Length: 328
Image (cartoon, rainbow, N blue to C red; front, side, top):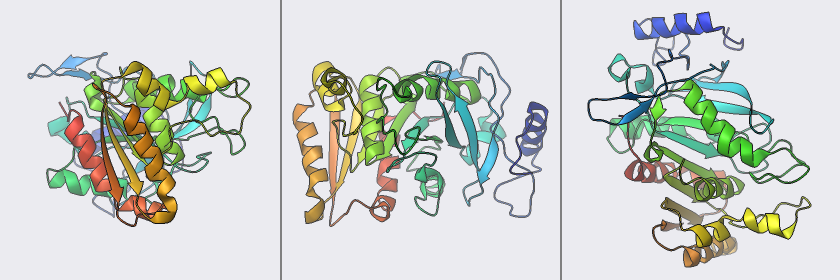
């Protein structure tokens, strides 16, 4: 059952059972699935505090459970981008509060997480054995140190042979458009989010860090905050690319030229033989000017490995919490 696509009727039924208390990710014996499905309620609703909440607009995507975790299920869907024409996998995790009746009319902050490596067909932020992101968020939210985030984890590139680096490289799939336009549209179509960019952030590791900073620099109307771990800020793809296009897709040039009002956290390992990460981070800070604000952190003896990233997840979530709007 967990591996089958669910119809809208099944999604509605399971969501109703969840709200009635018949299923919970914290009860290991249950077979009821917590699903992303939510009734559409128009493009936006306003809470008594005046914060605009974007209700799901549809059309509803079809999800299956990719894996069950101590923090609840992680869902998977295949997103065919209307604007880009690209089809790619997207993993989604919803915090426990999302299906809590007390939060039923509330929108949640969204963070898009980009994997490192080739990112073709996988995203290690969705695998708690590699990066326990969701469990850390549940724990930190209970401690009042982080918001309960909707986490969206798309693939990074269409195939291992096509490293487009989240850009529209001529002659290749338009991954830049897919990331910048189709993925946010998919999120708003399916989930209760916040209308303001203050409720939207992004983070990435290594090549995914390039993507996170690039998305925030290119789309400051969508994203308020971004985090880079072990990132670089000029394209390194081996694909044939005109110099003009390469420069136009360099986040360091974009930040220097446009000075968007965004908040950045730049992280790098401090071990001597990975100093290139610190050098790239330092070079970026030299071109940043207000209203862009960057915070840096060098991890003592840190390397460019996922085991080093694991220990920085709380710092990442706390930074995004300080610089984004919470559930409203």
